[in-house]
Length: 313
Image (spheres, rainbow, N blue to C red):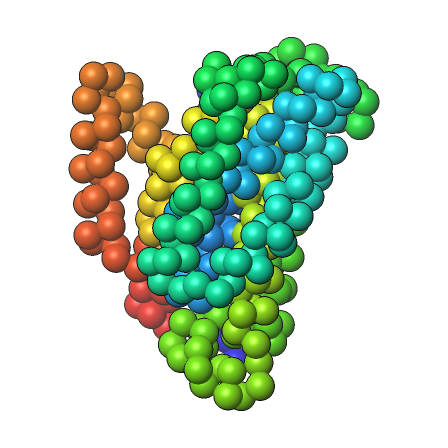
């Protein structure tokens, strides 16, 4: 039986980031923090994609998490980064639990379009809500860690380490979930849902659980992104944001829980380089680079690890 080194890789990567993260420039810390936020959303998408479900509405929960973090500071004066992520994830999870009774009934394109419609409803509501800044959004309070506010030169590093810790913990929990009977149902639901029901398992319940977990992770990611950027606006719920998450998921692949974070970091690096090299046509440069990766690596970047093991076995 093949030895699973996923947990070891996650812990080693976290320790390496804590040790070497202080040497990174401020802009690199920011990009990596945002990559962790996106990676958390894509980690939830991994659960849905393994079950054959494509959600075009994860921006709904991403935005809920971001506005939850902003609302804590705006209305209650709370700026603790871990509390913001906790509340953001909880609100997103509760929302998904309610909506899941409807969405768990649908499959294929109907699941994707319905999730997209719900996200756009939130976008429309936020645009019309002046108390939350309407189209301009609003700034959120500077981050604190358990009541402690780091010095200006240490803020980015503190937020990065916090993001890495939450991402590592979430990745290990999802990895453990995928090894449970409910987690192992995903490929069976994708291949033959009728046979799953015939064997006595509830495919609808499994999809509902995966939807709630994915939403909770997206809410945590949204709160983290809001903390890193320091500003939130309705664009976080727009359909292009959901499309970005789907793109990263395809780029990364679904082979391992580490893949979403690798894909998010790669996407952030390509995006930054494309904008630096061609500010006026960066979208085209980004599209060409990512299209090439998808064409030559149709199973995602993580598939390279399988090819490497096969070559050296």
